[in-house]
Image (cartoon, rainbow, N blue to C red):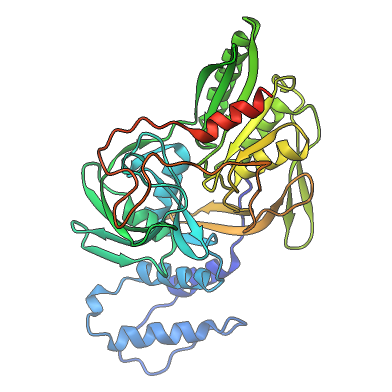
Length: 413
């Protein structure tokens, strides 16, 4: 899968050079400081002063100071999606895209600068505890790690690292949900999280078979899984009485863009799926792969909600812009920027926001989201009251999915 890699991060290289090429001698009064537009000499002076006067000099490590300086520089941009990831956090990010890690099953993002649940992953501790897309995480508590961290200024990579951990250990999250009177705490036992790319189920309604595709995330394993699902749908169609497809991207936090373009290409005959607009005004257009198109004649409805983000919003918006599908559910999350990743030799990584996504109509979805054609609010199985979660941990509830029911109704009209 082609992923563009940023080749030259000049500022980072400058910082690394400063910290690695110059040595200190305690007590030395005169030091030659490098000059430049960024006034790196000031950073050099601070490190010199720390080396001379800091009480616990034995705890000073150049590698940690370098990572701290780089992290501070990146955070100063004020973009929550542009992040420097130290080796441990970068490993977690790569595991996430690979689809397997130790955690509680929450995809994280930001909602009005607050740490928020973009989606609870299926069949995970978070989903079983009743955590929903859009919930805010106010605090992360882990007694074993000695963590008691408010999240009002937390970076995404730090939050991911704190919530993930060894399978079998526990983490407590203080949560807030709009419409619930008070915040509540939920303690989750970490499990091995294997993120499925998708699931297929056939439902029968009014004598018609409906294919319900639950698309969880655009991981690297989706390519093979998607082809298998398409073949199963075509086999079922040949048996007759086929009513169409409900493509469910609710709580899908995104993933690889090329995977979403592939899915769109099976429903569209031609045209633009998405455009990438860079800061200099240049555009790169991703078009339909005409070698696919296996489902272009099937009726289609797309299910969306506030947990549909990034690549899933692009897919839904593109299918609607081409008048290929109606959208049912709730407004999507609204993440429409592009991050380019680069892995460094020491295991760390840098994700830089380099562009924004535009739908075929030219609309920018960032912080706006995509509005559905048919608005259907999700009806929870238990109404939230007081300080309890809507579905208490361990409670088994047979949930009637009112949004899915409406999507099937719209499909068969």
